[in-house]
Amino acid sequence: MKKFYVLQHIDCEPLGIWEEELKRWYARYEYIRVWEGVSMPAVEDTLAAIVLGGPMSANDADNYPFMHREIKYLRQLVDQNIHVLGVCLGAQMLASALGATVSNGPRAEIGYSTVTLNHAGTQDALMLAFPRELPVFQWHEQGFYLPKGAECLAGTEDYPNQAFRYKNAWGFQFHLEVTPEMVGEFGRQYADMLARIPQLTMVKLMEQAQVKGHMVTLYGRQVIRRFWDSVTAVD
Image (cartoon, rainbow, N blue to C red; front, side, top):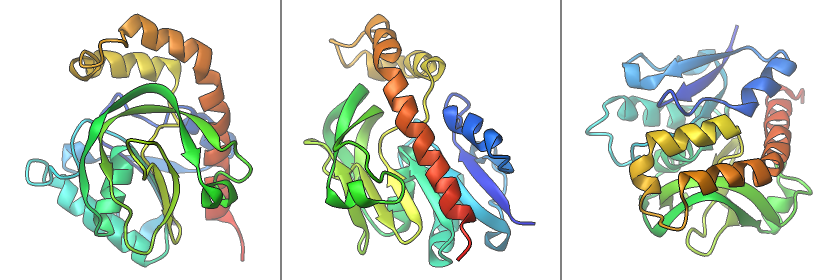
């Protein structure tokens, strides 16, 4: 039986609220802790894949040998039209697998903010009828160029490519899966990056989580349900 695989790059970035939703729908999934050097699943055994975030760069494959295997696996999934959803680093690796460049942006984006959906974004299966100004959580200082043949779905002023779709693969630079507990863990694990944003302290970050986190959760739950519906749809 084919499996739903979740590629995880670090303990503090799990599925979050998406795990709750997948369990609610009795979706059978398996974490692959890629940093432990495990083999990638066989493409023919893969029903779908979610690729989560992490602190490394998609350009660091020479320092993290698993990345070469992971990018090859993602390319094969896309070629076979198997559903993929990449988040943050996962989106950058998906873009890289599709031949696009990943590079530093003009500044880091950290904390709760919004991305602007374009027309394609508001019509996309995962974000249909979402508000044009979509609340999200961000934690990155690199971004991706749009892969050839992909459609841009959302952007910000500093990172015009915040979301894309290519066939049955989606890349989201932003996070919609985070819980307040995950946000706190981000702040602790990535304290050096947080320290470079003087106006955003750990206290303010957690205040944002309490005030704005529920809206991110609302849309995040819808995205993963729609992704699962797309995976399991019968033609």
